[in-house]
Length: 116
Length: 116
DNA sequence: ATGGTTTGCTACAGATTTTATAGCACAAGG
DNA sequence: CCTTGTGCTATAAAATCTGTAGCAAACCAT
Image (cartoon, rainbow over the protein chains, first blue to last red):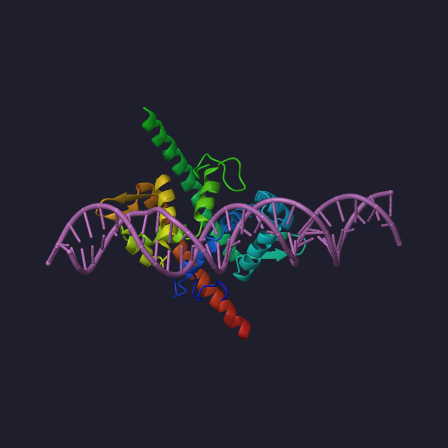
């Protein structure tokens, strides 16, 4: 069965949208792919390079499902980019970026305290 | 090498915190585990049940790394719960929940339009 | 029209991760 | 004792991911 809101996903029979979302984002590279598109559309090959040379087969698999889910589109001549929904989701990812910076700082601090 | 901010992660040599975070959250079940703790600490077995009977070996692997990363703690008698950092991260996940509901609604709408 | 470049992929084998199931050790309660 | 709950470990099989090779179509300049 396709992964989509309304359909059951791993460990959840209800298809509650957030569960489906977690299932999708919990697939390797999905978050990263969305993130790398944040500054504008990229070609398949550019996107691949930005993702540290992810294998083209997996990239294509991910892009297919992101397209099927209405988060990403492919425009002739432009490459891969967000749909309005995808763009909206990615705004949440920007919050993660800020959180992660804070997190790193706190872990760093903890490490120092530990030492003396 | 351990997965932690500052250390290189998949496809990123810099260790930029958000990349590391994506790497962690992109491991199956991690997002779900964090999510299921949102209403308070749970025992190992309760958490396992909430996650649709995820295998105990994987659950333990995930919990170990979440503890190592300072997101989750285990308190004698209470079970597994957030650290302050973990709690903070989970607030962002609540935004995902709202986004996902909107997403589901839009996809539903699109499907209807498609039919006629 | 021919050769080089870019783009968007597919194929496939080997490595890694995840799943499913069984079971163990310890502690508390009756 | 015996049962129940808790926090796991072990292991084999299945699924997923990685790395590499390569192809077809479009475009460009010669």
